[in-house]
Image (cartoon, rainbow, N blue to C red; front, side, top):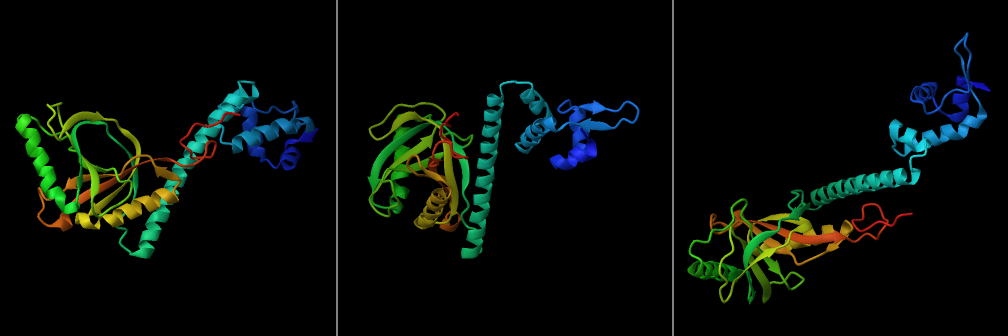
Length: 286
């Protein structure tokens, strides 16, 4: 047998840790001298100590280790801890890539104009209309015309304001300057009567979307799209739906296009294979 100091050196574990494990019932000395109080350990106890240390390095609490050693379904405990670590790693990786994005933008232009925020988009009741328009300038004509058409049939209809949500979805699959296949959506408080051009429907929520804010005229939105899709490509995501432009501030309250505020929203999903840390897809169990 070995005294506690010798045993700690053999196992590369501090005497303080050995005393703590004894207090917690994880590793009891093989013998305690009743007169001196000296604690002695046997070499056969090293495997159990190594298991305790290994589980601590995996991040298990003392209580969890005690349950593990007592035979409380160790496979389940390990799977749960693995899933927790993968979730933590995913968060850490997303934070790290955001920092890389900030640093890159500082290096490129110094003003960090576009930063991506990952969030969910709500499911809402809307009226919508799909059409092909020649260019961005057409919005200033077709969208007000849609509003007038809806109100002629639904004079008491009110748009949602908690919060307001109007956006255009692009069905072309890529950024274009001309002949845009778009669908306009306006969130409303209640369902109205359809018109020849407009349909009332409830759109489902989007679980995950990569979003960037653009301040300025619509003709400069190309840069915001480029920033969003570059971030998607570099961070293990892939598009999961058509991109949207959500109009937060516009010509209705600012005459100067430099003051217009638009959020580009791209639905995404993880492009990481199953079993890889950070993947949002179903994991394979051992």
